[in-house]
Length: 255
Ligand SMILES: NC(=O)c1ccc[n+]([C@@H]2O[C@H](COP(=O)([O-])OP(=O)(O)OC[C@H]3O[C@@H](n4cnc5c(N)ncnc54)[C@H](OP(=O)(O)O)[C@@H]3O)[C@@H](O)[C@H]2O)c1
Image (tube, rainbow, N blue to C red; front, top):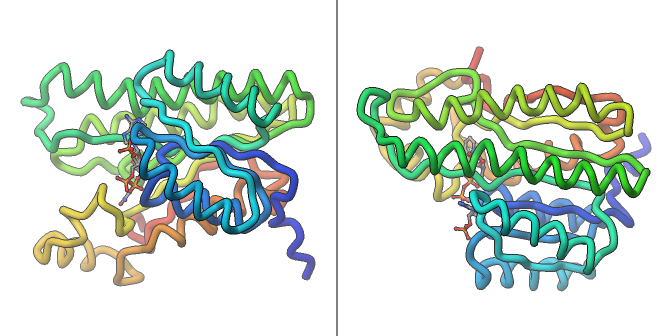
């Protein structure tokens, strides 16, 4: 079988939340497949380390600090990509947050705003800016939104986060509908529990783990690289006729 469909040679990819966890694994997988990478998150030192790993693989890497809930940072980020690389082929919207676990009847308006502005508005604005750049270039492109199993099934204490992820699923479909004519594909990945800092309270806790395992056919949590492999498939030519889809990577938890 010809596996050159997985190649990202001569592509430029922007990965938000690329300093650790799922975003870092995606950035490294894309670099391995031949892409030059812009990694972004709030803190520069961790990004510089990831960029160093990518450069050591023989690819170009640019670390850019930007807060996903600050629209001006996102504008600046896209401008920097334009100035430094002159193009953008792939955007992975991955930087999301959940600052509090709180019941729906208690969660404060400020927390609601932080979650929605980062997870939803940040994804939307960056996708809009990236799509305009891709349209200007005229060579198509690929946008991948990292959603969550919680975008389909809420968890107690994660209600607002779940709402933001459900909205990302619709953002993915609405963008795919309008961007198809420009040969820009838009898809989503919806992970279950992946072993990162974000979900450590869950996979590192015996009681929660036992509850999750009882409902997960594959009987384990996943590593970030398992999401990264599907991310590579989704943005590469492997998925050339797939758009508007949100793929669950959850070990069967949603069955
Ligand atoms: N891990 C799971 O079990 C799981 C399950 C379902 C979905 N997800 C989704 O997967 C994605 C990645 O999560 P992860 O597990 O890899 O989390 P993680 O290890 O905590 O990494 C989060 C990344 O996002 C960046 N970030 C956080 N807030 C940001 C902001 N306001 N602006 C810009 N960057 C920000 C962080 O870097 P800085 O601190 O430098 O900003 C970091 O690079 C998220 O969309 C999450 O919702 C994760």
